[in-house]
Every structure is written in structure tokens, then in C-alpha cells.
Image (tube, rainbow, N blue to C red; front, top):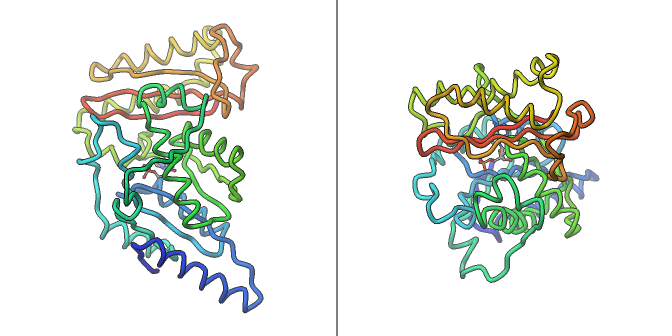
Length: 292
Ligand code: AMP
């Protein structure tokens, strides 16, 4: 495994390896896993998927300042490069790209990549500019790495929808591979931000995954058959936790992220709808979701 900070060096090394393999008569595909580090099993699952599907795996670790709002957790975002590098090595990553902020943004960015519509709801509505920061950095990383496949977690389902729209609109020659959400044994979706939770918040945060788990049972009972009934039931369950402060509970079409209408039948949208949650516990905002 090679860890690289410089953009030109990564480009050079990747081109060299691709050329070497091509001289041996082998076509090699590059799989790319972009992250902000502080790696956990969720990130590991993306790396494993990339290993299975691609010949060369590139992992990036970059806490991207332009996707954080002014009152968000950029400065305290957890970091542990040494542990991340050890895990990446164990998982068989070929290149870890760890650019500095100065090398990614040597001057204030005057060019932004902005996706409309799918960025205007859910987290996009609550975190102004967040997805512009994401699409701008992912475009830069795609241009630097030039992957054949890029792996993203459904934990950030709106991000998957936004990146897919961007790749389609801008003809990036990359296939986006969405990967399932990895959870703790008790159901909590893994996230680097879970370290901010106190023990009690961590325990109460289980209402998120529990409410997503109970959807099938609620739908089987006659009471829940429409979008608004399911939404009300989920809110009711989350509110059983005195620490939960709901940011949103939304049921939308996926991946288009359009409104379904409050009286829309859930049965009619099976496989094509997402239930997306964002809930604060103290100052920590957790997100979770499930495709219906
Ligand atoms: P982050 O480091 O939080 O920016 O996440 C990097 C990538 O890992 C994104 O594609 C996330 O969706 C994905 N990811 C984060 N948590 C999970 C999880 N629990 N399960 C699957 N993928 C995840």
C-alpha cells in the first residue's frame, strides 16, 4: 500500500501501475472509495466491495472544509490517520490519497459544481451549500483518480442520488456503486460522528433504526397504508425518546427524491421510496434511512 499526499504523485503512480499492467496484457480497473476518514466497518464494506470488483483500489481520506457550514463540526471532526492507514493496509487498499486542504484548494474556489432539485430537500434544505461542497470535491477527486467505479454508502442516500445525477449530467466516465448501510449489532448505523454521543444518547439513538425496522410490521397491521400514516407512526416512535429532537422524517421517491403525496399508497411505491430520518441527540445530528 502506498500513502500519497500530492495530487501529481498520485496521478503519476496510478498511470505507472496501469501502464505496467497493460504491458503485461492486463486491463486494470480502478475502484475508488472517497471518505473523510476515522474509518469504521461502514467504510471497510465499501473498500471490500471495491476489492471484489476492481483490480486497483484507491481510498481517499479528506475532511472537505467546503461541505461544512459555518456552525458545523469541521474543527472537531474526528481524525486518526495512523489507525486509518493500518486498516486500509489490512483491507488491501493499493493507494491511500491524503491531500492537504492547501493542495485541494490552493486558492479560494471560484468554480463550484452544483446539482439542482435533488439537493433542495432533506439534508440539502437544512445544510445550505453542503451538497455543492460534496459535488465539487467529488468532481475534483474523480478528475484526479479517474476511477472506473466509485463506491458510496447508502447511509448517505441523498448523496448517492446527487452524485448519480452529477455523473449522468456531466458524463463522468465512472460507474457509481451504492453499497448497503452497515449497522452495529443493536441496529445503530455506523458513523464517524457516533463518537460524539454520550452513553445515554447512544442508547436512545436506537429509536431511529428501530422505527425503520418496525415499518413492515406497521404496514402489515391495517393502520398504516399511506405515506402520512407511516410518517406519523415513525415520528410517534422517535418521540418516545426524550432526548430526540427531530430534524426531519420524510418519505420520498428514490432516487428522484420527489414528493409522493401524503395519501399515496405505500404498497404502490415499494422499492421506489425512501424513508429518510435526521434527528439530533444533543448537538449531534444523526441520519438514517431505508428503502421501502
Ligand atoms: P464519510 O467518511 O462519512 O464521508 O463517508 C464516506 C463513505 O462511507 C460515504 O459513501 C458514506 O455513505 C459511507 N458510509 C458511512 N457510514 C456508512 C455505513 N454505516 N454503512 C455504509 N456506508 C457508510
